[in-house]
Each structure stands twice: as structure tokens, then as C-alpha cells.
Image (cartoon, rainbow, N blue to C red):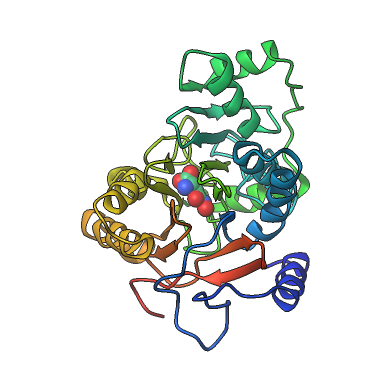
Length: 328
Ligand code: SD4
């Protein structure tokens, strides 16, 4: 973890109040099982979720829109030069080209996604434009880029960030592809939020797996895999190896389990159990889920230890350890 992220984590942990029922990262308490509901509520994956939540919270206060909030929150991460898994500074594919995936969804079923898109700094805003300005749900590749140009999105120069270039040069020496869980490839941001009136929205944005095949698309822009939101029930988002998450339709599965009466925590644990059952070589696969229901209860769980997430409420913005199926 970078010094800056460590600083953000420590300073926010130090200053924030904890939610009732939630355990802080590194605290003695066991991982959360259930939390009493609270609204408004914004949740996002990993430590960079802390500054993203802060921006989302500020936007929610400013416009009152949970959709605006989840877009603004992850735009923060899309610009974070230290994050090598989100935005144009992310690690490239095998050919040295950075391609981005993103999705956004509201609890009324409206959604928009983009995949395999180049040169766009804020794919989440492009996904929102697909949702609001086209009759479609998903645009990919060159078509998504052409739509971005038509909508007035600036085209960025195709040049790797200095950090990404350094990592890519190192990778090219052996050109091996073997993701290391929790270190490489796992910094995607997924964000889900609930406003005071009970409306839900979510967003997810990533540069995907580093050194992926050119054209590979992960779970993040696939509605139902990386993100699903339904005002009648709740919302879920995912991070980790996209292929493993797509196989079980992870976020949709969690929302449907909650619809059938499971708590967000029980639903996340069942999704992980299903993912473990359906994927070979599970020791090499990390995946984690976040969920909220419409009452404002929270759940989170991962395959392996190390997955954490940020929770913002009126009481503060804190980092929480998710708990995992396999133990260290
Ligand atoms: C993907 N799920 O493209 C993304 C990667 C990820 O944290 O979540 N990284 O498969």
C-alpha cells in the first residue's frame, strides 16, 4: 500500500466513528455479521473507497441525488494516479494498451455500461451517457469511443502513465500471466449507495486485469455480474477475478438471495460459496462482494483474506475488513 493510502486510511480511521455492528480494520472485533440499518449509506471497495466515498457524500449533500453521488465518487478513483487498476493510468493489456470497463445502475432498472473503451478519462460518465442518452445498455470498443467523441468527451493521448510503463516493461521480460491475489489486479472500485428516501444506485469502474488479452472484458461492465441494483430489494457490487464473478452472475445472485429473505451478509457468503464451488484453482482466485439492502443493512465477504471496504454514514467514513471463506 502506498504511503498516501496508508495516511488516508490511518487519518480517517482515527477520526471517524464506527458504525454500530461494524468492525474496523485491524480491530479485535470479528468481521461484521449484521449491522442495524442506516440511511443514507455509501459503500465502496478497497481503501481508495475512503476518498471516493468522501466525494460521493459531498455530491449527495449538494444535489440530493444518489446517482450523482455514485458517479462523482468513482470519478475520484478514475483520476488516482496511484491506482493501477482504474482509469487510464491503469496497467495495460498484453499489447501495452489500456482499455477500460465501467457500469452504472439505478434502482429503477435503468443502467448503462461501456467496455473495452480507449482514451476516455471518465468511463463512468460515459456509461451514464449511454444510460441517459441512448436506447441501449452497453457500448463497447470503437463504438463506445465514437459515442464519447460525439458527446464531447475529450480524447486522451494513448500513453501509459510512468508507473504503468515501468510495470509493463518489467512484465515484458517474462510476459507471464499469473495474478497474485490482493496485490496485483485487485483495485477496482465498486460503489453502492442508498439515500435517505430509500433510493439505490451503484457504479463500478476498472482497467480490468493487467496484461489481459486485448479485447478481454471483465465483470465490472456486465450488469448482474459486477453490479446490480433494485430499489425493491438492495444492491451489490463485486471486485476480483471477473471471470469467476461472471460465472455465477454474482451481484444479481446476491440481490435475488436478499429478495428471498437473506440478509446482505448471508447473501454475500452464499455467493462466495457458489463461486468457490464453480471455479477451479480457487487458491489463485480472489473475489469479494459488497451488498446493502433497502433498510440500510450491510454485508461483505471474500474468497481469501485481505478484502476491505469503506462505509460512509452520517457518523463517518471508515475502512472495514470483509472477512473471508478461507483463513490466512
Ligand atoms: C475485472 N473485476 O476486470 C475486475 C478486476 C478487479 O479489483 O476487480 N480488480 O475482472
